[in-house]
Structure formats: structure tokens, C-alpha cells
Amino acid sequence: MNIHLYQNKKLTGLSALAALIFILASCNKDLPDPTPIVYPPVNNSTSTIGDIINSDPNYTIFKAAATRVGAMSMLSDPNKVFTVFLPDDNAFIASGIPSAAVIAGLPITTVGGIVNYAIIPGEQLTSADAPQTFPNVQLPSSITIGFLPGTPIPLKLSTFPSKTSVGFYDNNIPVVSPDLKFKNGVIHVVAGIVAPPSKVLRDALYSNPNLTYFKAAVARADSGQTGLNRFDSLLNYAVTNMTVLAPSDAAFQTLIFGLAFQGYLSFRPLPYTATDTANAFATGSGAVAAGPIFLSTNNVSTALMRGVLAYHFLATDQGAGFQPNIRVFSVNFPPASATPFFVKTLVNSSFGLHPGIIASATFTVPFVTNLTFTGVGTFPPGGAPFSGTAAKATSLDNHAVNGVYYVIDKVLLPQ
Image (cartoon, rainbow, N blue to C red; front, side, top):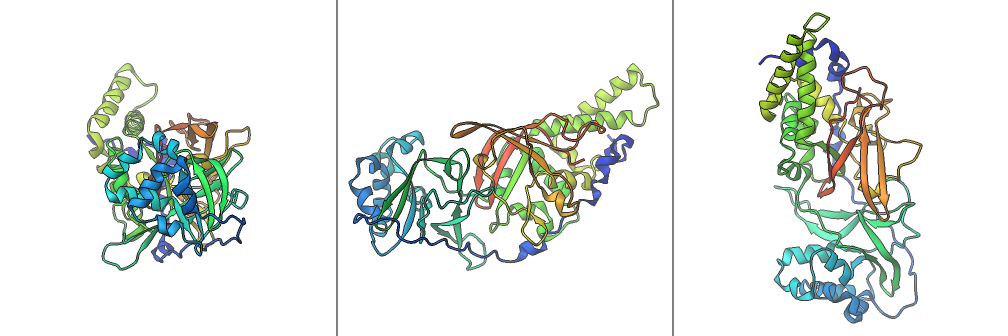
């Protein structure tokens, strides 16, 4: 099969994506640790956080977990300060851990992750203090891991509190009882366990059986690239924050079929005959039948895949050009309204005036029950901007060490 989709006369707008080469050189620098937000004491209580966990019958499971990993003495120290996003017994039960007895049977690393990811040392962050700027604030948890192979650099896992018009959250988990103030800090009771991430985005995405085309698209887009200009390297870069919209296998199959179908017809004279339509259908079906390997052939250009993938990485400009430096959980997107909410992408690193993607979240308070993303491009080309069907997130808030990804049911097109 030799469709040469990148030569398709009707896809000249997409072919122009060859210009979408983004520059991430500044990501080679070590990112600074987040600046601690230190607040004055907020109460006159004589009890410490450890005291209340030890005595309150609502926290028996967390008490068992904290005792097992030796964290109770730390939380009982009146000379230290903490913010704790604390799951009570109901939160543990909702997360699949029904009793303190179960804690004893879990791996010690799992228990330690649950406990230490809930604890922000050196902070007294109240709900009133939490910033309401999009998307959240990054704060270091009590988990430190040596995550960078071959280097002595420790990596502090961060957690991401946020305050929105809908509620108060840690990552995507709602706070159900905020601002319980004690001698050495503040507790926010959460609705479920705020679980720490264990993989980088590269490993998390590549191990998802519904994202085999996404992996193949990355390989195609990375052809001829080096360093952090490679999407593969970027996804494996532990010391950053990213948000990735990953089209499912079915989404890529739909795009490939359409490209192949349209590509065949673009070389046929008008008006098309029934034979032309049948052959175009067979060509599209053959492209899909080839599987993800189709994306590694010259039927789809490297520039096309590079431009398309760039449109699936959210980005902001923090003074050094647009970079993939934003970790957005579903609850951080504002509720759907008549005014579209636009977010920028890596496309803006080459085309600064590109409008980006429209994000729309539907809440059944306090959770997001529907999240969609609409791209500017339509297929076939020629439709009005943002007039195409929105891509729906079918899997939300997949958290990794260096970001979060969403599985979406449509490939977004930047033009």
C-alpha cells in the first residue's frame, strides 16, 4: 500500500504541520524545588495532629498505616508543622481498604505511599489560603525517591491542592471537612485516598493496551529528533509537570481510515464514481487493518504526526516560551459555560497566536462526570474552527510522576 497521505491535495492544511517543531531546550535544566508557603500558627490547640489521629475513632485505619511506617512520632512533634490531607475511615473504605487489619497485609511501600503522600511538611495551608488560580498549586509531599537513574538527585513527589468555584481538592480528590486546626498544623479530611503516582508518563502510557497507536505515533513523530525534542524522551523526563491528551486506538483508527479514504479520492477526477468510492473504502479499511505499524510507514508523514501530537500536550508560557509545564486534573477545569475555556498546547511554541483547545467540564458536585476537548481543526478540512465533534475523555486523571494523562475518543487537529 502506498497511499502517501501527506501528498493529499485536500490535506494541505494538515501538511503545513511540518512547521510545528517545538523547542524544549530549557527543560534540560534542573527544575527548582517549589518555594514553601509558610503560614503563621492558626490556632491555640494543645493537641497535635498525631494526638487527634491516635485518639479519634474516625481515623483508625490511617492510624494503623501511620504506626506501621513510623510516621506517628513525626505527626506528634509539636515543633514541626504539617498540612495533612487525611483520609478518614470512610475514605479508606470508599477506596477499597475496609479495615485497619487490611493495612497489615499490604506491602510496606504501599502503606508508606498512602501515609507520606498525605503529608505536606513545613506548611499550614488552609482552604482560605489555597490559591484559586488555574490550575492548582504544587507542594512537596513527604515522599522522596531517587528517581533519576545514574544520578544522586532525589525527587520529591509533589501534591497539587486547588480551590475552585466548585470545591477544595487535593489532586482530584475532594476535601469533605477542611481546616481542622491543631498545635502543629492543619488537617483537611478527604473523600478518598490521594494515591501517589508510581510511573512516569512514558511507562504509564505505553503500558495502556488502549494506546498502542499513540505509542506508534510517538515513534513516528520522533524520527530524526534528539534529546527532549523527542516526545518519548519528554514523557520519560521525571522532573516536570505535563498534561497529555492521548487518543485511543479507536480514535486513531478513525483518523487513519478518513485520511486513507480521502487520500485515495484526492487523486481521482470529479465526479467520483461508485468504483472510486468502493476503492477508497477498501483503501481506508486496509490502512486500519495494518494496525499501529501503519503509522511507521511513509503513508503518514513524520511532520503530520509531530504536529498532531504537539496539539495533545497542554502548555503554558512562564517566560521561556510555551512548554509542557502544566499538570491539570479534571476538577481544575472550570465548569462548562457559555464562554469557552481555552487552554494552550505545544503548537503555541511555534504558532504563538494559535487559540488552543476548548476544554469543557461537567460536574456532578464534587466530581467531574463529563470532560470534553474540542480542537480547531475539522476533518475533512474546511469546516468552521471548533465546529467539529468534541473529543470525550473516556479515562480521567491517570496520574504519573511527571504529569497526568487522559484517554480521549477522538484525535484533535490543530488546523
